Image (cartoon, rainbow over all chains, first blue to last red; front, side, top):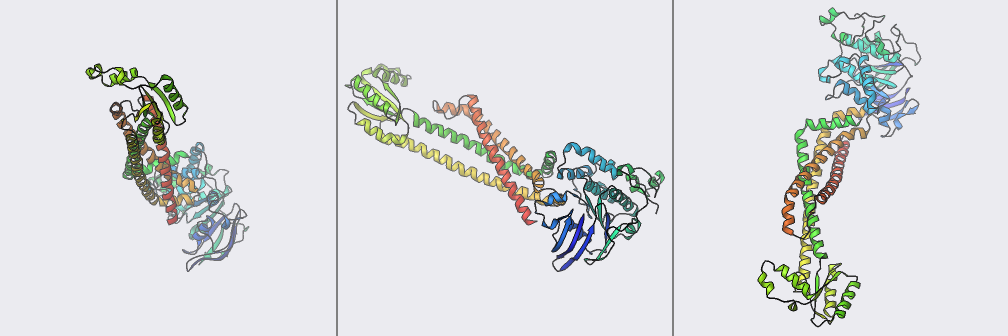
Length: 272
Length: 305
């Protein structure tokens, strides 16, 4: 689905990426890991054509996106759902409106909005937060709102830039559960992270980069050791159900304020 | 999808009411002056047309002129392509006109008889530029005693004077008014550019996000252009309504003052039609003004990104 061929990118004297090549297949879940400043976000920005590479080729579904014209960029970006590191939610719009904007941008008729928005908000566990503004949400809720906006247009590819970056373990775990389920529905997911615990727990193919160079990458078709729970046909069906790996958060825990995020999305998480 | 743009535009207006107010105020003033000027130009046109088309030339006939000679001259004038509306006024009719003109002083008319009034041929011209040559030609006719202009028997000098004065006034109204409206329209345009630029600056973050999630330039532009169009629509409406109410109030007195000169429509339907035509023109101008202003502001904002 995505193929980087000898891609380099510099910002003035700083070489963000140097001659990197890798491939991500359709339906894969791939981590891009590395320390801060390694070039993870640059790779994602190159995929969404926020940046243009200095050299090399980036193929998306067989077409070289570096050759896209300015007019073609919006249509290309609509095929990709992005969860930004800094969320990039519209502060003066409610959660529902933020998700609706993505539908409006994609040119989906308004009649279809309500059902799709409700479905995706239910999936990320924000159905009761739909009318709140981003500044009224917790960090985890904002991250999930960003994920809902990325998912609502049913993109081929999900890019997640440090989606667990500022979150506590429980919330990060819940977000990862969601991304995992979305991937198992057939979506390709590329996630940039430096969270080793997440990478260790949710085994996926990992492309490690350091100082703009790939230092190790597993092969494209290498069998990943994924978490051993079955994927549902519809991820929304998972909401509120117990998984093989965890148990439902107890009401007592919520009342005690221990795992508030878990109550909000009703996703079962593994005890830590 | 249009709803989301409309909502965004109205939210932007609500967020910065003073910017919206200043834009609407300037636009209202422009279109108020525009409407006033349009009516003044219409009235001055009518005034000029009235003087240009009314019977302007009177050829007073000699007493000894025979009916067949008068008839021959009348036919000659009718056949002349420069002349229109030729009318023969007999001595009796001339007396009747005199009596009507002096009706407020009956003594004056009692002292006169038809014999002292000459018969005449009255006619108007299709174009006043023919006036001099026609007058000169008619003067040479043997049955013609004197040729004059209706405003005065002084002749050609008076004719030129009246018409040229009217034309000068009309030109001043058009040029002066046009310059004033042009300046106001320019001010409105730049106020719109400034306000839309400010709006672009405050929405910079939002625009960047929309751009990243795949919004087309048209999607991003739409609420901004819509906002400018709202300002223009309200400005046109307020300016037009204010001017309309003014003319509605003033029209009876103006019509009465000018008497038979149709400077303004006397029928309500015609009056409304005149203002509807002006409103239509102003909507087009306002729409173009806001469209160009917002496009300029957007293109400048994109360049600075």
